[in-house]
Image (cartoon, rainbow, N blue to C red):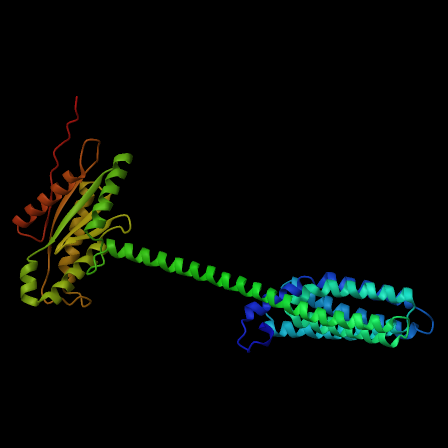
Length: 397
C-alpha cells in the first residue's frame, strides 16, 4: 500500500490523491454541519442544551477551519505547501471531526428513543457514505469512519433497549466490513493514480524524446547542408538554394547574380605550409566571404576544395561586381590579421555573372558564365575579378 511506502514515495502521486479529497471537501463540510444541526435539534432539551451547544460550536469552528483550507486549495494557495504537509493537515481535520462525531453518536445511540436512534443511524450512515470518496487518501477516511462506527456499536451495546446486542453486533460487523472494503477500494484507487502518473510520465518522456529527435533531425539536416571545415553551405545546399532563388526570380522578374571564386595557387600553399595551414587559409577565406555578403539574403557556399560561390538574389551585374571586389580586398588583407596569422598572403580570383531569369532559360547559363569569367581572371593574373558575358535570349517567334 502506498501509505506504508518508504519516504521515497512520489510526491506528485501523493498530491494527486490528496487533491482528490480536497476537491470534495466543501460539500462534505456542508453536510457535516447540516447533519450535526439536525441531530442537535432532535435531541435538544433544557438538560442537554449546554453540551449540545458546546458540541455544535466546536463543530462550527472546525468546519470553518476546514472550509478555509479547502478554499485555499481551490484558489491555489496550497500549491506551494509540500504534499506531505497537506496530507497531514487533512488527517488532522479528519481526526478532530471523528472525535466530535463519535462522542455525539455514541451518547445519542445510548440514550435516545427509538425515533431518535433511527435518525442518528440514518445521518451517520449518510455521513459515512459521503466520506467514502476520501479513500483516495485512505488514512483520512479511516481516521473518521472507524471511530464513529465503533462509537455507534458501543452506544448501542450499553443502551439496554430490546435487541441492543444484535444492533451492536451489526454495527461492529459493519465496522469490520468497512475496514476491509475501504482498504481494498483504496488500493485500487491508488493503483489507478499510479497508472495515471506513469502514463503521464510516459507521455512527458515521449514528448521529450520527440523534441530531442526533432532537434537531432534539425542538426542532421544542418550537417547535411554545411561544409564541416568552413561552416559555409556545402555543394548540395548551394544547388538547392540556387534552384530556389532562380524560381523566385522567375516569378518576381528580378535579377540573380552569382560569383564563382577560387583561391589562387592553393596547391602551392598547401605543399609549402602543410594541410593544417591550408585548412586555416580556407577558413579565413570563408570568414571573409560571409562578412562581405548580406546574410541571410545572400549565400556563401564551398563547392569543394578551394572553390567557393556566392549567390546574390536581387543583385544586378554592377552590384555583384562591387561585392566581388569587396570580398577580394578583404581576403587579400586577412593574412595580416592577427586573428588568422597566416604564414603567407592568400588571394582569390572571381568570376561574376548576372541575369534576369526568364522562361526557357536555365540557371546553368548563369553558373557557366561565372566559371568562364573566373577562368579569365586566372589567365589575367589572378587576385582580380572578371565579368562573364551571357548571350541574349532569343524567344521563339
